[in-house]
Length: 227
Image (tube, rainbow, N blue to C red):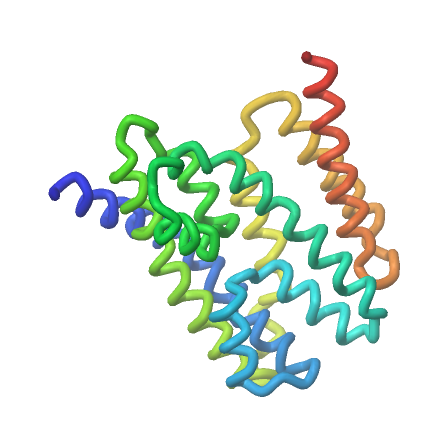
């Protein structure tokens, strides 16, 4: 019992420092949602149902630019490709659990959760892993959904001096750095970063899509070369 309780506490404890990025991230999503015509209630419910900040923000940003529906859908799919890789990476730790546990785990899987889980999980302590995962997810969910609601309600009243739009790149850099463990991941990160900056001027945020493809391709090339 103590081991499982310590898992919940450890997950929550490790997540708390990351909430300084999750809350403004959620606020930015709320502001963006209201900016394209959603009500504050709709914006909040959307974050509850989807719990996918990066793809939500990307979609709202494109809608604000009157991007074609095909571009919006393609961008969201590309942004979420990383979740497939995250799932494949941590699936072995949850294989012994029933679907009633695994399906909720899919819903709460985010960059923040993955970054913590992949460094903390131990295959010899499956129940601790499960509790740690939940302990990390609960405060993140509350912070993100609460941030979305606050951003949607406050909307344009949030001062531009807060610099919320700078939170997203900072958050992803902070999450990416600890996961760079080998040459393939380093090259993938560098390639994606360089292409993202170079393609910043492309219409409809297509630079993001191209950067994601470039990063994956660079990592695969290094892996294949090593094999």
